[in-house]
Image 1 (tube, each protein chain N blue to C red):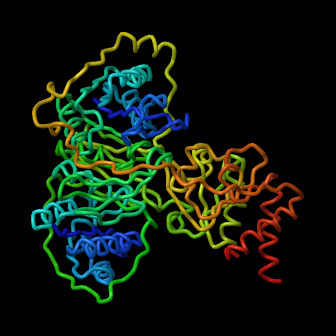
Image 2: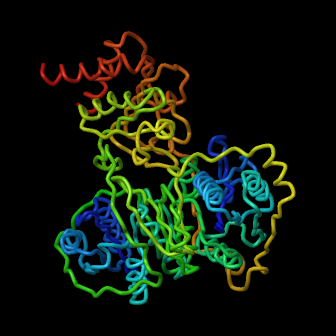
Length: 261
Length: 324
């Protein structure tokens, strides 16, 4: 199986240092970057599928020049090669541009499955994988908790997570799949993987390499941030210690005050 | 230019979702502020009941009965109808910030190149378009965003808008199904997992079990308290990853985002991953053995102690107050 995985570098949520700059854009210097969580689950699922069925995993990122760091990590986890779309004119790109650019880059790769995260931890619009699918005319299987390809039949089944459990959905390949944490914990790169990744190819693509008309001139994006502020802070709470029965009474009083009980 | 604002409704088991009534209310309010008009769209195998319900909120509802959707995902068909309506004068499209809503939004971004204001916690009509307030970077910043063009998409978070019916019901008109640009995935089976309850997003009380509940058995206590408080059981990523409870119950960055009247956390440390999904709760109570657990920073009431002692004591206290 040939699997293309969309991986976005995002500020590390665990570091807790994300912030916006004065221009309301992400301050990329403020926080270390990692592969977006749901994209990493997608990558792990892709690596497991290739281990079971043979084939190769290619990762695709649209990112600033230092995006090679997270692509290199994906290669160390087991991806065979990376494609890095980077261009100064894509800084701050909007969703339609991101979708057009990723689709144009993906169109240059032969794949059976295109995997991406259900959403990202920084922006969180949750529409990029679906957008790339639409742009490429691929069927979309979203919110995957399991991916079950049938190569002989040329079809793939996905457990699409629902509020009640999951729906089993199916489409012919090539297909696009948006991925969730339910696919399983990503692996850590092994030392061998880290060594192997050093010699693996990361192909750099500029906007001009991908074609014309993919991005508006002069960064005329479809959306703009007009104001930004920190979240409201919560008032300091009360801490109680003591015997369980006393603590239970205090909690019950608190709930009664708020008409919960 | 006054906008024509389309509310895209979602139907689950034949019923209009609660979030759809909020989407419809927002579309109507924005249209009123814009001096424009609002309408709704319901596309389903059996849309009639949902379309009738939606017409309580909007002056005009387009209902599409598409029998093929009994066995296929709906987003491609919904996107095809929205695409046609954009050609008929719709300027703005309001969708639910759900998997279905985002799939429709993605299809429209890919096919029509529309901009999107995602995950609205509030929206107003300002100048000639909507300005949407949303939380980004895992709750680290609140941003107000606008479209730069005359049309675009908005996805709305659950509970951001209070659903209010219109003063008069609207009319429902029927449309024929259209074939989507890309064939939809077929639905082969629908599987319900044990523990499926009312939606976490709609719950007034959410009781959450974290790593501290120490196993699937510990969720018996979480369930008991949720039941006593008329609430729903939630979980952290740690307890989901441990296999103690299904992923559908997970609250946080890669799970559900909730803002109940009461969040009660048992054995929840309060990792950033989790806080993103619950920090907007009206009241937060947490029980944890570790006095330094980060959830103390955001809890209104932080109880240091053993949840297996305090939980049963709380259940007994609630029962005695009810009978006493």
